[in-house]
Length: 201
Figure 1: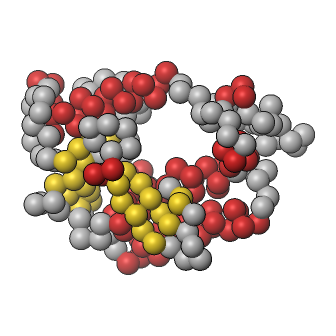
Figure 2: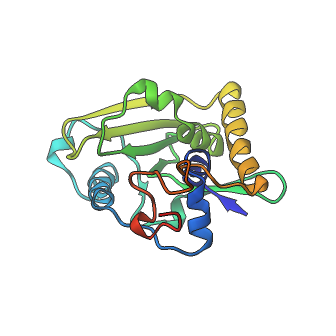
């Protein structure tokens, strides 16, 4: 079974959404998703050298390989896991010459501390154990922006993200998906992945 960072995060924070997915209920494409994609494409165009963005002239890191379509298979990684599970995801950019990954976070400015603690960052670097990772973060426009760089993942970080993933798998195997529900069994997630179509409304 293929799992992703976002799926493990969802299982631990609002596991009832797993049931929505099994039922085939479509996800809501909230407006901020489109804004995030727009900003991602601007940054990716700039770092790949395809489309220079004057506001980003000070961001000189280069990533020849970036997403050109959603779920670009060239950017996919997989990590074999235990008992028939597999972790899969997509990085925002790769420079195989300098051994750097790119991660873009938009909408809200990320702090360096949040980036360091991020299980997503640890998981992605576990998939590329000898690679450093560069975070580009901005708000609702590409400026102002901040960048951070983190060296390759440590053994301690690998252990922490491994434990985190296994906790998510335990929820699947428990067959109990009540996370994110109120005392009456109704969806209590403000922006549920399935919105008003959530099975638990």
